[in-house]
Image (cartoon, rainbow, N blue to C red; front, side):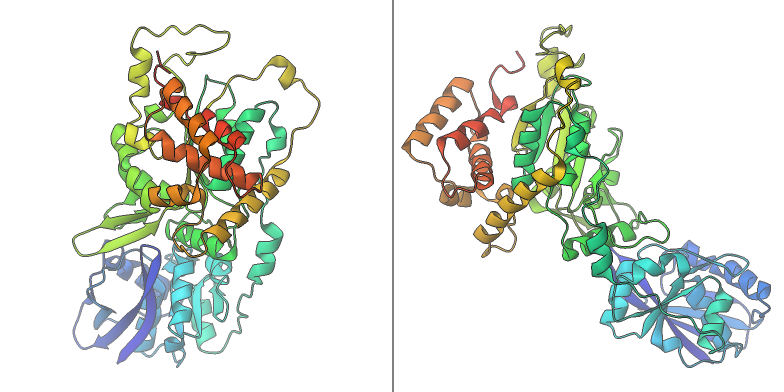
Length: 512
């Protein structure tokens, strides 16, 4: 007897429906074909143990499981449940006509209980797209799948519950979630707030500008100056996630298995802070079964690289292309997978190995040339993609003990959102450009025009401060963002002057 059940394979952030055909016939042996990996081949032992534990029998004749299409590699243990149900139906131990209505996924324990799986959100999206009535899956994954409406999400805790539901002996109500209501209630809830930061008003201003224009930032300062604390509060002043961004972000975290049990829609912007010992593949993604890396997990949020010069040179260099293209393409012999990577890069570093170069009170003990060698660990092409260079100085005792509460993140966020709305209107005809930071050079010339006085100021600044040529476009982009925050159509002299301040590392002789 031939039985068909349906599962799903996740490649990148998209899912593909897999038809699982089971035939029980004369002969002996258990065979799984259709490019299964070892975890699927081992399913025989898990399925057989689960069937026996629940009082069913494993056929002692020939069992062939075909997973089609056969040219797509299937990986993981999430096919245990559809294989087990297919065997039961093919051996006439399960009487139902509903198998073709549902996509079924779940990993079986030896006692027939179900364990949660990864990548449920893209699986649910694909199931709805292909017209399936619903999805039968482990209870822990139900809320995540329920994000997708017009799909019956049937949560089950054991294989027996799935059998009873399909045979009509057990009524299981589909999990229903008002996604927009949940999103609306939970959106914008961040633990860290700029109101907790005493002093550092100039750095807060720089981060506000960065958030308003989507600019990358590097903060240079001694240990304990507050670089990490400031960076952690940046997501709280970025514009609120919209529903489309939230779905994209949740899908990536689902594929990577980062959502956890009973998780639902991600409602705050991600903040990822990998350690400096991270590998190239862990940062940009990859592996034999390509998985999203840290830069994709930071999609629509912030990637914070603390102690930037301590990262391996190769790790920093592989990040250059994603910073420009806002996506990562991972090519393999038989497939090419694309992960989105539209993130803001926030980096921090000490000015020298001892950390006290340019410190107002403590003396630097680094030898001649050491500071420059330390800074040279960060390549020019990477710095070229960072618009704001900000020097962070330690907070004074008076600032730390001040009782006046600083401006909170919600207030700053409102100004940032207003500036982003101006940019949305400006780039309405350019679907790939959403913020000032993404403007190409030609567009900078067209949209960031300055008058004669501004040209004179910029020329003087570049000559006196020894700014490099790459700083020219960056200054104009940042000045355009400052003008947007001020709600003005023209870039004025104060906007330009403030933007010039944010190019510390471009100054000749900064490190000696």
